[in-house]
Length: 545
Image 1: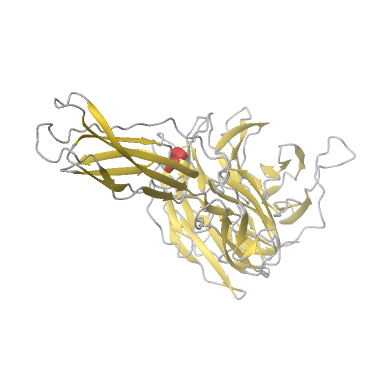
Image 2: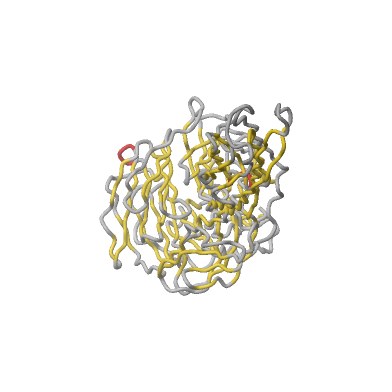
């Protein structure tokens, strides 16, 4: 164990309790105190977990004692309450709240002293023996998520563990099932960057170990390793004709494609592939559906309507309890969302004018929706997240706006929104990022590196776009070609004409198995092997060129 929080200044809670009148009868010789236990142990599973229940020590004392002093010191102890009866005191000891001390190992002491009359008039008191209760308190580190939580069989990859208390205990090892991580770096008290080796398909509980920690450290994170899918080119029909597509997701854990649209007033449609065969669509209605996103652990699908956020079971699509935003401004609506690797979702709002609108933060673990501490104005913002959930980029602006508003970068590591040096008014294509956030595409055309340095541009006929997981390729659906185009975005454009920022196209256009229609959205499998295109006509499946 190393680097524990500093001990708090001594806190004294003295119970000066009149136990018996001096003139009362009884054995005036007995000044002893006996306690039921001389030590207590508390533990909390994590720094943001609830405070452990208080424990009670019984103190039995002789009837010569007229006052009882109870003093507590040390950061382990939060509060002490003493109740006195005839010759017995119940001392109720509560530990400090985990959030107030953070992770680590803490100690404290409870000193119990009996006082007897020093003279016949009992005008002064004499201290008797002191009994000491030692308190030890362990607030553990905790692992909550790993992002991305899906890996590809036979491939080593890096991921981010999120939780708390990682810097308060020495992390000795990280295991995936029984397999140790190749390497890891503790980046902050809430984040560890870890590389896992090539693994066969299966589920691997993530566990961290520390020599200074007593017992097993709680972890709710599991790495799900899948075989790289091999989907044939084809098309899938919608249950309802000509929908406007709101969002398209690929659920790698369940080999499923999820389409959010305005069909029937709003609906989520899922197609699942089993043994190479796509299922009939499962459709669930959601009135005024705006957007959807999978949580960082893949257990829930967050469905955003104009006035509600509804957590949905990702396996069954059964809706949970909807949450209303606090103080939603008049004429505004919930617009879009993106999930960070800490399992907090940034939720933006919209309005049909140039006006500042709220940004909310939805915490999956507590199912709460609160105002986000953005620090500056946003208008009709649209977010896009990296594959590992480390960063979320927000573009903003109304079509009637004449100036280019600032592009905003949100870091899930510290929950801070930062204004970038870019000013750019958004169009209909949301921000797109690769797995690690090393490539960022804004407005479907402008490709930036991780520091927002412009690498080059894509054709203005780009309708939709996804990036390869490693950030070296951009796959676009091009309205002129009516096909998929591939571009090399591994380096900045290097053209003879200085004013030409066009990024190089790789190969020729790739024809599709069918026409996706208008308003196309794209998704890509985590291995980078298959593209999905959803438009107003149908869902198209296309192996990457």
